[in-house]
Length: 474
Image (tube, rainbow, N blue to C red):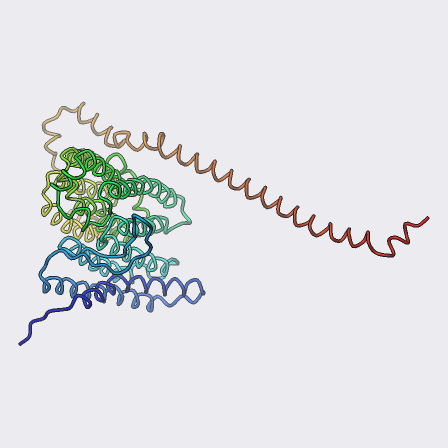
C-alpha cells in the first residue's frame, strides 16, 4: 500500500483554489450586477454557498496535505508582482499551524453566515450586494491569514476593511449607519498607517518584509542583528494597527456603531473574524514581541485597560448588540494580555473559541430577545437580578459615580470626537471644497480655451476670403 504523499505542486494548486474560489465568485457576481443581469436570490445563494463550501473542503485538504508533508512551516512562493532594486513584491503564503487554523475558521464561519443570510436577507433590496461583499471579505481574510509577508498581508487587511465599511453602511437610506461607517473608516485609516509604517521599518531593519526571511532566526537573531530599539519601534507601531482594527482603547468607539449593519455582517465582522485580525497580526509577529519586552508590556497594558473599560461600559448598555460589542472588546483585550505574556497557544485557542461563541450569540440576538420576552411572560414578572460583587462592596455614591462614567464611556468617545474625528472631517470637507473649486476652474478654463480655438480659425477664414476684401473696398 502506498501512503498519501502529495507533491508540492499539488499543494500550490489547492492553496490557489482556496483563495480563488470566493474571489472568482465575487468577480462574476459583480460583473453581472454591473451589466444589470443580477441573478435571482436562489442562484446567488447557491453560487456563493457552493464557492465558500468548496473552499472550506479544499482548506481541509490543504491542512491534511501540509500534515502529510511533515507539518513544518512552508514558505510557498507563487509569483512576483513587481521587482525593483532592493525590493520585490512577492505573492506567496506561509503555511503553518497558525495560518491553516485561521483559514479553516474563516471558511467555516463564512459558510455558516452565507447559509444563514439566504433566508435572513430574503427580499432585501441589497441582497446581491451583501453576498458580493461577503465574497470580497472572504477573499480578504484568506489573503490576510495566508500571506507570507507584511506587504501581502496589508492587501488582505485593506480588503477586509473595505468590505467592513461598506457593510456598516448597508442601509444607506438611514443616517446612523452612514455615520457609523465614516467613523469606522477614519479609525481604520489610523490602523492602516500603523501597519504600513511597520512594514517599511521592517524592510529597513531586516531588508525584507517576508516572514520567512525577517523572522528566520527567531527573537535572538532579531535582537542581536537589529537591536532592541528597532524591534520595540516596529512592535509599538504594529500595536497602533491593532488598536484600530480590533477596537481597543482608545479607538474602540466605532465597534458599537458598526452594529447598525445587518445582523449577519455584525456576527461575521465584529464578533467572529474581522475584530480578531489584530490578534492574528500580533500572533504572526510573535518574534518581534519576544525580542522586545517593552512592546510586549505595552500590548498587555493596552489589553488590560481595554478589558476593564469595556466591561464597565457593557454593564450600562440598554441593547443586546451594544452589550455584545463591548463584551467582544473585553475578550479581545484579554487576548492581548495573553499575547503580551507570550502565551501564544492560549491566545490562539481563546481567539478561535471566542469567534464561534460570538457568531452564535450575534446570529441568535433577535431570537434571544423573543426568548427573554417569553420567559418573562411565563413567569408573569421580570426576574430580579442578583446584586453584583461591586454593589455589595462599594458604597452607593461610588457606584453612582462609576455608573455615570460608564454611561458616558469614560468620555473617551467625546475626546476622540472633538480632537480626532471632527478635525479630520473638517479637513476632509475643506479638501473637498478645494477640489470642487479647482475642478470648476479647470473646467471653465478648458471650455474657454476650446471656444477660442474654435472661433479664431473661423475669423481667419472670414478675413482672408475674396468677398471680404471686396466688401472693404471704398
